[in-house]
Length: 327
Image (cartoon, rainbow, N blue to C red; front, side, top):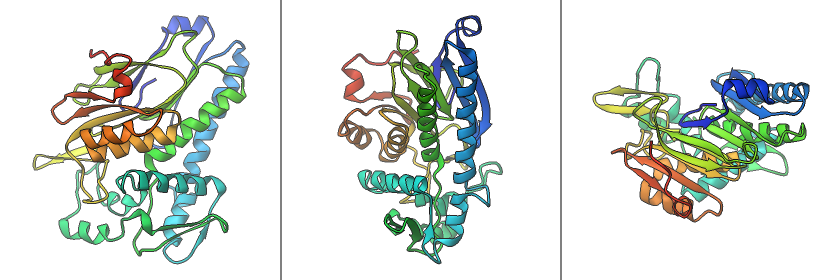
């Protein structure tokens, strides 16, 4: 199963066909969705995989900024004018996003969308300095006002908008893993782009997760043996364009409205998909030194960072069990 910067080294096709492995792939949420699981009963495995894909479609329908009838789009249209009632699920996600905003000193900020939507990656167009400056006035997580008792959200600034982006994918893989467990699946992987959730181990052995080389497609810079964790990668190489020698990628610093250039990719391992996703974005914005200090202050969180020169950096938790092997 491959994602943005993550490759799960899985059994051969022959093993999958003959020993109870089941694999399902789909295109949902604007990315590649994958389910790989071991099942003793194939009908149960098929039902579990179907349920995971259906859940991905449900989350996409609610949280896509591109679907005009999604809950997220309704929030973006109305929350600057009034407090908008939201689902319990959405309220929880927004509340978690604010937690990571505070933790990162505002560098993880879903209100970056006020500037993020100005970039056209297909046409290779970046906003002018003047347009960017106007949009930046609407960015700032403190302007996202939640009322837990009333279950509403409102924007304190005109022009504000939010984009859950990878955060929704981290949520989706976590939900997918919970579905597998409800079906009695003890070993599997659910992935959505650069976010993966590992369920259990690989039949008594760890899953081996490859961290992609940001500049050599199909190559890896490290391999991590992991079990029952979430893994997220944020990289500058999946959605980008270059203009006048500058790489404009989809990871936007909410302070500047521009793409940071000190890091090429960040892979974070954590106990849940929301944490791994938010921390990978935060570390990318902070850079190697500050980013790894933040990671090492969080229990159960580790990271692999590839800096702008291609050098590999690891948190102490990974170094304690051996530096990831370079390939």
